[in-house]
Image (cartoon, rainbow, N blue to C red; front, top):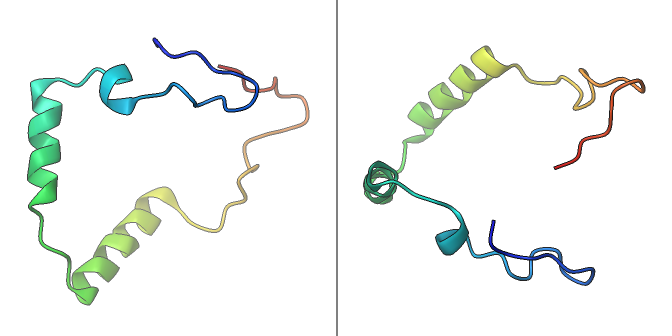
Length: 74
């Protein structure tokens, strides 16, 4: 990345348009997503149910973490 963090604001120089390489396919998908129609309440509930079915819900965030895990660093 081309930005530098500082103690006061670690994201001061972050620019997602400059610092995130996007392909033409990415830009096309973003443009298509802006033209999507909102879901009806029924369709939205179907989508939420699908997410819950495949990814689960109610698991604690630390379910896979233990005190023996190494800390996360970038």
